[in-house]
Length: 324
Image (cartoon, rainbow, N blue to C red; front, side, top):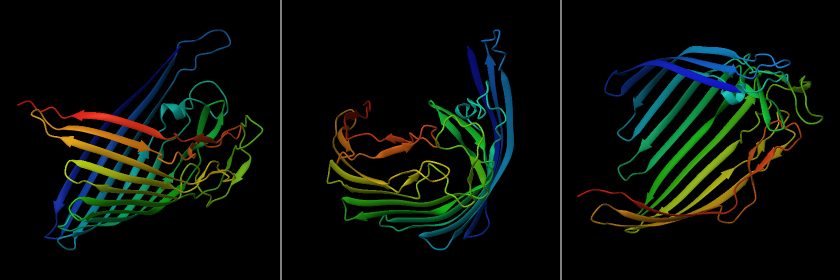
């Protein structure tokens, strides 16, 4: 009874200059045009035509500068603008409970800056460090969740800033250690009113969210670590993923606790006349921990938490066919 269509046309240009033996510059721009259209085919007495269309367009520039400080070290800085339209899922329901799409939603626009360093030596070790900031206007956020239906609205200005660290370290000839860590502070820069908690449904937001409050659905810290041992045709790996607590509401009065998961992986390769054959096995959530895998932000019935998967097993066979 309804047909939804979305179209996207982009044009972009990018240029790179070598400014000297140690300096290089990258500059570019992208123009995006996105059209959402919904055709209502169920039009009867008491149910008027709810068809609609919304066009979004923006031009976003980007520029980056790289300095080669040495044979193994690069320093860089970049800045740009971002443009994010709502999705059809976000347009699907109006915050006031009315019929039709939420065509009043505006796109979120952002200003992004990143500073970083990348180091690599001849032995294969790599270290990457970056600081980033993204200031967003007209942030798209959950207005409410009722009966599995999420509605969205624009809440104003937000900021995401933090650091990322990546490290890859070979150990001898057959082992490798890899770490990736992110610390992210996602916060509101302009206060607003929200719907959260009971009674549901809530149509008019009345609960104040102060500037500086944490954005829901975003953990403050995440860590991924992997140790790999590859003697000959065998491979054994151990992984861990750690995440801190995640706010589930705009007010921060409900949080999913942090968790740490452990996984194992093993495989063996055999050469064949028609390409390598690989047998592999993997166990995720090895200790069968119970944890919250995701949150339903601002759920109207306070059922915010979705459980993560239990222990999972994967067994597979891969053959990279290579005709002789």
